[in-house]
Amino acid sequence: MTTATTLFRARTVRSPERVLGDTVAVADGQIAAVGEWEELRRAHTDAEVLEYPGATITAGLIDGHSHPIWGLAMARGVDLTGLETRPEIIAALTSGAADLPEGEWLFGWGLAPNALEGPVDNTTIHEAVGPDLPVYLMLFDAHSALLSDAALREVGVTEPHRTVDGGGFTARADGRLSGHALEFAAMGEIADLVPQEPLTTRADKLDALLHGMAATGLTSLVVADAQGGDAVTDVLEELERRGELPLRLRIAPWCTPDLSELQVRELVAGLGRHGRRWRYEGVKLFIDGTIDNGTAWLHEPDTEGEGRAGFWHDPQTYAARIQLLHSLGVPTLTHAIGDRGVRFVAETLAALPKTGVQHRIEHLELADDETVAILAEHNIAVCVQPTHCTLFVHPDQGDSWSQRLGEPRNQQGFRTGDFAAAGIVQALASDWPVAPYDPRITFADAQLRHPHDQDSPAVGAQQALTPEQILAGYTTAGRASIGETGSGLRPGEPADLTIWAADPITASPHDVADIRILATTLDGVVVAQYASSKGTTA
Image (cartoon, rainbow, N blue to C red; front, side):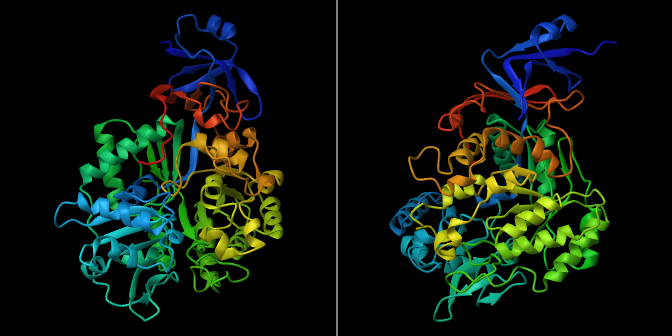
């Protein structure tokens, strides 16, 4: 028997380092060869030919850190992203409440804390819709939420209190509940009490989201959570009953400070669950929170006196969990944002025996020179989100991140260029829904260090990445950062391809975000084509 072959012919086929030819031969879902058209056509005279004149074919793009399932629960209701003033928030909530069926909660997402123009509390909610409507708003960094007084009553929260990760339900100056649920343990306390959407609705939304992602050139996601337990599996199984997922999902459940060693072992025992295109693999941990919330672990306190500790009351317990997971052969992802937190995680990983288990640090918004050296010396991989800098850090330092850190620290973040120069394996990602999932936006912003659609000063221009480094971050480095090989367009690899209307390496950074994605393939089968949307929302 002969295996049917398909030839994908374009203007160029390229890896991050070089042009490999103009045609990819695909057989049985795998790359059979990459080279020049004439040679491959002679070798496969009966092959089906898919022609993309003027196009560039790259390995399929990987978003190294995304939250498509949990994120849909966060990105629900009124879209508050980009709002910068209290009157704008009030107008948006008032409009959202006007269309709300009686008896239902009002949800919203993407709220920037500095847009409240005052304390992070529910005063603005009550001014917009009154105190009697249950309202749940997710803040833009997804690490906290605001609830109206009516919502707090519905979920049974009656007084301020702290939680195991250092967050909690915060108080106003007079001691009353503020409505601010700070960090994941607090939000987790009430998660099952907040109204949830039916399975079919969640499956419909996830299906639309994943197809939207595929249309921007993405073929794979590292899903850095499995919040909701069996509900995650339920929605994925529902989608696979309907057909094939348009992306591959590698899902890493959380190991939180409240888990005992026995519970960690039970978590590991659940790894390996899988469907046709999704699999539970690896574990996600947090060493700290966010700079905007005052929960990042910093060498020196922020301008409000916060940032003095991480999530683990005894950081050595975090180290013990990492050591246990390492001994069990489990790769990990650790969220670390503050410079002290990043240093502690780097030192912990550097001390592990070299057994081939790949660990990675997520975000690294602040990292000192000594930490960069540790990462490079010990081959510790990182995953960063360049658009978190370009979208949320303002040149005038009016954003909450800059104000919290103060000078000169607010000039020293998001060291993507330094990581690259040090030879650190650096995956790139969106952290959707925190930032848009479209990789073309990252291709532009990571070069410009400002939003590609704005003529604004660069933030840390010396940290810009080259197009080659960005493509590697979405392909070969994305794989290597989680201990996998592939995405190098080599024979035998899955034929996961992104087909661009123009070459993202040679395009101007001002134009790359507008390059059409002509097709995206998984196993050589076209799963999306002719995208024009930039995927800013679900």
